[in-house]
Amino acid sequence: MHITEPLPGEKSARLVFGLDWRAYPAKGGRAERRRYADDFGATHYLEYRVGTELIGGFAAPDASEVRGAKLYSGAARVALHGRIKSKPAALVLLQDDQRVHVVFVVRGVVRNDEVLKLEEAQARRLEIEQECLRLNLPLTTLGAGPRIGDVYETFAASALLADRKLGRVAKLPVSVPTLVPIVAIIAAAAFGGGKLMDALSPPPPPPHEPTYQERYAAEVRRVFHAPLPRASALAPALLDELGPGESVRAGWLFEKATCSTAGDCIVAGRRHGGSFADFDRVATPAMRPVIFNPDGLHLTFRGPAVPKVASVSLQDSKNWPAEQQLIDMLQTPPQRLSVRPFEIKAYGYTVRIDPAKLLLPPPPGTAAPGANAHLVRQGTWQIEGFRWQAVLLSRLPSSMALDSLTLELRLKDQGTTSAQAGAADEQVGVHFTAKGKYYVLN
Image 1 (cartoon, rainbow, N blue to C red):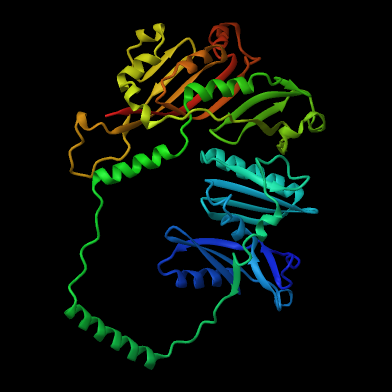
Image 2: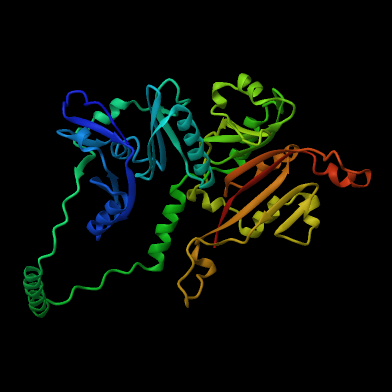
């Protein structure tokens, strides 16, 4: 935990970083707060609300450090800042000499609140970026400092001084022993009063139970509110971004690049005669941080940024192809000879389409909506091929969204025999794997 110097203009106010954070329901929050405070051995806490949950931070500062001081959580001020709370995920890096304050926020909830050395902060940044890639969570990196690396937006420490009352860290209330006689009297009075009120007042109406149509409409809004980049635009754009890169750099061979729908691609390489020092000398600032694997044979670095493209839109649903029509569109002439409509293979180009399902299944025991209901169904797809076949991706229908794209260099195994050469040739080259979702109307 780190406590800053007094804030400008506030002699007794200080920011504190490095709290332990937990989320718990607002209902019954007092008991949850006490439980977590006991677990962490905390003497101070703060809470703020996100939806129906309380986000609690817990700390045990040294009494000599906080005597006469008013503490405010720096992470809470970051999470509740107007530029941060509207983002799905935000990473804020604030450099202070040889240390970095690292705050990671997901939908308003503090996930990481740490004070790290510069090298540790870079490693933590890459871990968070890779976690967001795995979760398909758009990440915005903000911050300020000469050695934190590139950021999407500048976010200076002075931004935490805008609301001087936000994020106050208070001392935990002392737990008072239960007074049995008084509690018994209060309980009896409450019980009797409750019975009297029940007799005089009619029961409240039952809570509104949303219908299937209402829940379906809410699910549609949720799905199409998030960016759904069109595969026909994003996949070729990513291949163009990754194409000009060198396959061998300072004795390191390009091995694989992994891209999501936001942030930066992650590129992996393997040793091809070089050393870590060789690669570190030629690595550009845009490629950092570079992570060297302990095995001495592999490394990863930052690749190109994922470009923004048009999204799959519900407003274009009248132009969406039907499911079988979409399958027919994806089949090249040689593939139409296949007798397997959902697993089509030809010339190294593979299309897999899983059957579409309703965004929200009907309640058990209820018949499925009819064909005239015009409900949206969602399915998954995966396309694999080689770079020369990438032109087929640009022809994908506008109802297909991209989730991820992986590009890898496939080389012929040096031990391949002449009898295996024909089979191995088909596997050699720059190979891509694109995955995503498609949408059709019921």
